[in-house]
Structures are given as structure tokens and as C-alpha cells.
View 1 (cartoon, rainbow over the protein chains, first blue to last red):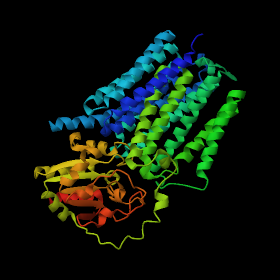
View 2 (view 1 turned 180 degrees about the horizontal axis):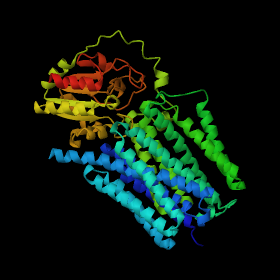
View 3 (view 1 turned 45 degrees about the vertical axis):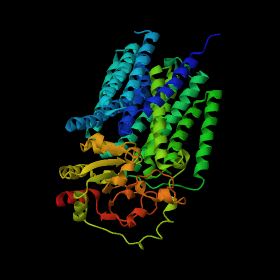
View 4 (view 1 turned 120 degrees about the vertical axis):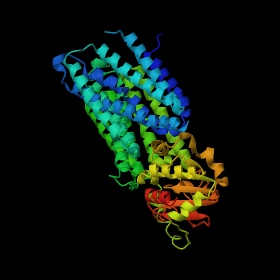
Length: 103
Length: 465
């Protein structure tokens, strides 16, 4: 009997939770705010689904309701991706600058 | 066009890059490289998706335009936002992830063929469950984060909003949601799907309104976690590895942060979720106040004490963020250091309105991160320190947490500032903190209260130094 692909995805999911668990515990508490902003940015990888939804179908059907929801999701996710990564970068730059000042 | 297998490998690589992005945050030195990995992972995921869609006509043009519009809004916010507003920003961003998850789920529901989920009214049961869960969690994240945003921004009062039967109402709505998902799978009627989303929007609001201002670190972490689970739900629907991995990472990250925050307050997660301290406890305090004598001083007294100290520990709290006093504080410390005083900073896990809030503000003010310590690292040093300068913190220093089992904060780990030779307490008035209890520390012999705005007082001390 063949194994349902769902089981493989479930395995990836469970193992990723464990990876997340160990990786996040090793994050230094002083970087917890950047951790939140970067996790926020990467969870916007949901844009992948939005792109598939938006570009689906024939060109003349591009404004069907399903596609429009895809396009809306693209805008929201894009705000998050750029905003999330850039604000993380900005915060982390401050942590780094201190090191230079110090030494 | 790329084959489905190659595409899956690329998504896997993105997922690994995201893991490395989080791994980088284990120290400030590697963190910037980690962020770069995250950006590469994201660019890769978006790039291969566009290529695989293979639609380079009108739709592609709109896609680029929308990416640019969203991207410029995001970039603008990222550069303009003051560091003190970081909690609101993160809450706001969470709401966007939640809403995006809802939109993608809606799109998949309306046009399931695109994602190989079946045809409308005949969607695979597993996919229906996954997309309803994704949409429901996304919707809860969306409205919940909006409420959190409004509370943090001060547009909505930070005090808990509670009413009779609130938790039963939430429970009923939760069960109702489960029932709706069941019937949606059974009948495929789209009304059920829309109702699921509406109920979830409502539930998001109801879940967050009873939680008070100082519990926001838990709320933000929790919503962070939810946004991850929503992404994972959509990832299962779309059979997309990058989304599943990311969702799991973000979900567990938020859950761990919530746990750390709850532990910092010695409260259970449910205790926080079920509503605030503030509302119930305020009445019982108040009575023994006003009677006890308090020593209060001015900036000159404080300057004198600190100049003649050999070591000073600074305890910042939310009040410092409100007064934007971090830069003045750094200047004061610079002057003290020139006078040969050893200065360090002590950060309580729940200081501020989000995990790591104080650290970011101090970093912004150019405080070297090796002078900033966590609770367990520094707590023993208070006994050997001459002056503790408490600026905008309150409950996290209250010795009652160790002595009075009746107190709502009993058992909460606190910074032992009372052990230092003298305590300078910058505060606008004697009013109790968020937990609604009087701070015993105000009335101690070695405490000098400095009644003023945190920033103004710190600036005055610099002048007298």
C-alpha cells in the first residue's frame, strides 16, 4: 500500500516544530524583538499561495473573484515581507554598531 | 516551466534558509547574516513560484505592480517607525499575515482547480479541513492583532474589558466553529465557509479585549504563534513545503515566547488569556496607601548619590519607553562612567510591551549589549551595588512577590533592587503599577522617590552631574 503524501507533509511539519523549538530556545533574549519581526516576515511566504491564486487561469479571467483575492493577499504579504525584513535589518544594525563603538 | 519536483526542492531550500535566519539570532554578531538568509529564502520562494506559474502576460504585470506598491508601503513603514512603536508595528504586521491567510484560503475555496484540490462544491475533504483551519486561525489573528494594535497604540484603553459569561461565549463560539467545519465538509455548502470566517473574526476580537496592557507581551507572542499556524494550515492546503516549514517554525517560536513571558510573570497561559489582573485587584489596594511616609528627593540628591557610588544598576521598564527616555539615560550613564562609576542594565523578561522591548530601545540609544543583563545573570549583583536606578519599572521590582502569598504577583521572579544600598525610583506618582498593588519598596528607608517624568528627571540629573 502506498503512503499518502499527506503523511510526508505531516512529518515535515512535526519535525519543523521540533527544529523551531530548539532553534528558538537558543535565541538570545536580547534579540527577542527582532525574532518576532523576522518570524513575521518569513510567515509572509504565504505570498506564494497568493501568487498562484492571482495568476491562475486565462488572461481574460484575471479579474475573477478568486484572482482578486490572490492579488489582495499579494499586497498584504508584500507590505509584510519588505517591512518585516527591513525593520529587522534596522534593529540588528543597532546591535552591531554598539560592538564597533565598544572595541 | 519547472517540474513539480524541482519546484518542491526549491521550496525546501527556502525552508532551510528560514531555519538559518532564526539560527542567526542566537547572537548579535551572526544575526545580520541570518536576516540575509531569510531575505534570500523569500526571494527564492517568490522567484520560483512566478516562473512556475509561467504566466508572463497581464497578470504578471499586475503582480509586479502590486509587489512594488506593497513593498514600498512596507519599506516606508520600516524606515519611519520609531523604535518605541515596535510593539504596535509587530501587532499590525501580524494582522496582515492573518488577513493574507484568509484571502488565500478564500481564493483556494473559490477556485480549487488551480491548487489541485478538486472542483468547487467537490473539494477534497482533507483540503477543506486544512483551508478552513487556516482561514479560521488567520481570521482570529487578523482581528485579534487589530485589537492588540489599538490597545498598544493607546487608541483603545489598555484596561481589560470583561463582561458576564465572556468565557462561555468564547467557548460556545469555538464549538460552533468546529461544528461549522464539520458541516462544511459534509455538505460543501459555501455559506458554512463564510460563516466560519465571520465567527473567527468575532472570536479574535473577543479573545483579546479581556487582556490588559501589561499582558501584551504574551498577547503579541501568542498572535505571532497563531500567524504561524495559519500559514502552516494554508501550507497543507497548497501542499507547499516552504509554507509548512515556515508555519511550524513561526508557530513554535511564538509559543516559546509566550511561555517565557508567562514564566516571567509566574502565571499560567490560561490565566493570562482569561483576562486581566488590573480590573479585579484595583479596589483592594488603595486602602493602606497615603499613610506610610515616603522619602522623596530631587535631581541633585540623585546626582550626588550616583556620582559617589562605585556601581550603579539601571532597571528600565515600560515607563522609559513611554517617556522616550533611553537616549537621556545613555547620556547620564556616559557621564557616570567618566566619573569612574561601573554601570550595568538589568532587564526583566516582561519589562515593556513585547519580548525584548527594552533591549531594542537601549540598543537604539547605543548602549553596548554586553552591558545589558537578563534577570538571572544580574540578580545577585544587586547586593553589592550602591545605587539601583529604577526608571519606569514597578511591579517587576516589588518585593511583595517574595513575601506575601496573598498577593496576585506572589511567586513572580523579581529584580532584587531592594538589596542594593540605595534605590532611586523615578516615577510620576505613588500610584500602583499594572497589577494594581502597592509597591512596598516606595516606603523603605533606602528608597528615594524621584517624582517626575522619566526623561525630564534623567536630563535634570545630567545637569547636576
